[in-house]
Amino acid sequence: MTEKLLEKPWVKKALLQEPVKGGKVRCKTCERRCTISDGEYGFCKTRINVNGTLYTIVYGDISSMSANPIEKKPLFHFWPGSVALTVGTWSCNFTCP
Image (cartoon, rainbow, N blue to C red):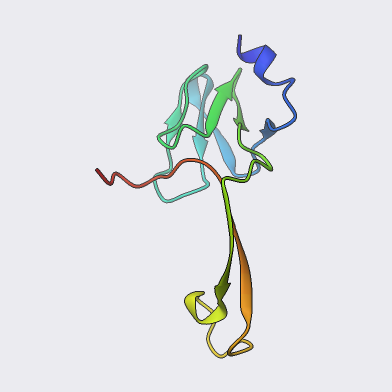
């Protein structure tokens, strides 16, 4: 089943990963550093381990897009008064209720 998943256009090999013993992979996308077994998903449910390689299953899949004031971003004195395009994808690594 997971091999079929790899044929989808929104599934790409994850850039931030490292192999771990036993066919597991450590995701290095966020601070959680999930260790993911073969065929399993990470905490965020957007990364899957397929035969010891980590894949993202939301590549290029946009769930929200908005124009926000630049002051909302962590940029100090960067074009004050301008607007920044903000794009987000599915899922999250927080544990909010």
